[in-house]
Length: 196
Image (cartoon, rainbow, N blue to C red; front, side):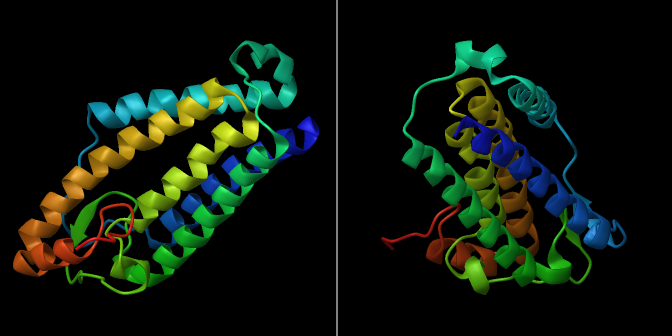
């Protein structure tokens, strides 16, 4: 059974990178940028976590026994649940990406003519793409049953998401003002708001 997860984990990471790469190449033009986020300390530390996660996955693929000191026992069904969480994350990511269309950008920025999107998953969540990132990359913890791999990817994602959301919400308030304030009252940041 371990072989299945040793295959699924790199497939997950490669699929995530390929998905991001596809949209960066397709939509990642910087023309007409009014304001964008500059990479700061959080992004640099997140990059270190990502590098650790990537290297740990490579070691895990080659020989998981080399990382046995960081493994922990979890049942097969929970590891399978990790795969389900990743698939849910990919579905949400694609839905959000399609909903944003030309308004999407890899780097948080405001572009000329950008509109406030409040349809699709944005009807209930302000940052569904970041929710998807958290679902997809945190699933590595369950799939690998290895805290080094899991926490490296989770650490990278949390640092980057927190930094991006802070900048994006300030940016949206600056450009959309009261319209965005009203939208914030009706939606959750990363998960639907059930109590209004």
